[in-house]
Image 1 (spheres, rainbow, N blue to C red):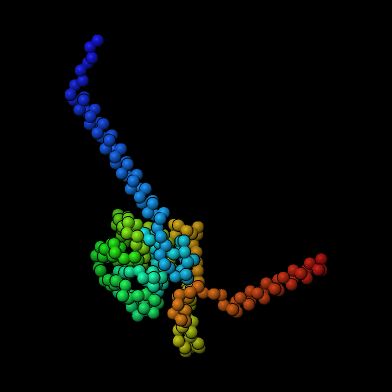
Image 2 (cartoon, rainbow, N blue to C red):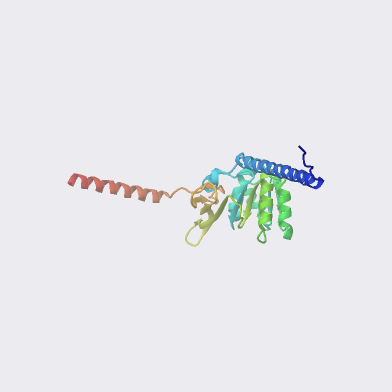
Length: 259
């Protein structure tokens, strides 16, 4: 029996097909490794030292390495987020906030010796932010315009790789939580006179992880001693609630006896 000869062109085509399959398998394997690496990095992210007062407004109760957060317009809330890591010895950076007050930051416990300020980066804000992400623990930035989806994705990958936490003043598509001050009340002023001693605010937080729905928390931002603390219910309000509860209990007991 004669065996038909295989033409050189068919043999070359078969070799090329096999090489293409090997290349495809290699690319799939590389992609799987990258995805697994990204997932491992996300699952193993560590919590950064965070002020206890902010536990109820952050997913997991703390800032986390490799994550991004957005703050709607409150510089004092940004300082509260920075205070915990800074007091623990972390290097922090602030980009694009020319009115970030160094005196107030010091008063709130932020260490200026480990704080990098870039007040006006202009159109280079993204380049400056990315450079600081490479070397600092927490970076605050205020984009002058909306970032592209590609830029957001690249910066997010950089955060995960470097283990830096990003706080964006304004909207940010990939933020773990969005924080905003929804109400504010100053204390210390009497009838037309007195000194402002504290600011009680409501902070609303929502996000893609950690919150089934929007969460609101009352905080002193700051209190009369320049500390960030949870705001406790006023004594008068607590007493009123207690009296109402006692009255309801007495009424219930009276009806039960009468019946």
